[in-house]
Image (cartoon, rainbow, N blue to C red):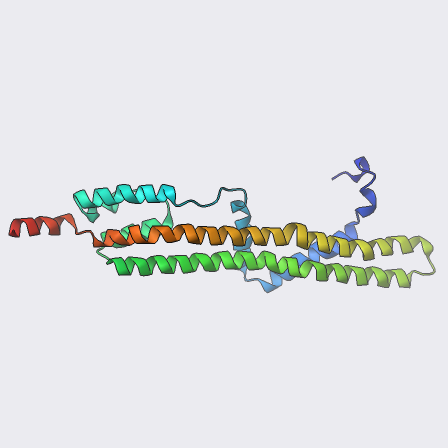
Length: 223
């Protein structure tokens, strides 16, 4: 941003204070977060502009798969193109002969793994929101030290005071306008998706109760 075009904002721009707060917060987050969770937390930013997860399209697809399975047996679902990972795992288990209880257990494991990934992403940004004000205080202390050590040089006092004051401001803004809102939105989306996916468990588990076509044909011949 060219602050020369906005004279009113020029007093609030200090690269040293920004480097202390931004760099310190980033370094602290990197040091306290495993690499895998760090990648997940940054990648989670892609889901923020997306629409909330909705179960209706998947329920419609499950309904279509159920009709196919009842007519031709669950083995007919083996070639179905399914993009959702939970649905794909449940259908594959049903094709392999899994029972409804087994499919429910599989979906519960899938949900727990997803919840852990979401939790890791939220914790990264929540941690950044906690660290940023502390880094602001560090910048304030650094600025005060510079100011007191430059009491004989009045030209340097202004710059040191700017670092001291703006570091606290940057820390508060980074925490409350960036990191904390991201963490809150990610947490809200995770809860919403968990509730929506709970609607898929029963119809997916029911696929495990459909007899394979071959077994049904044997029953008809025996009858």
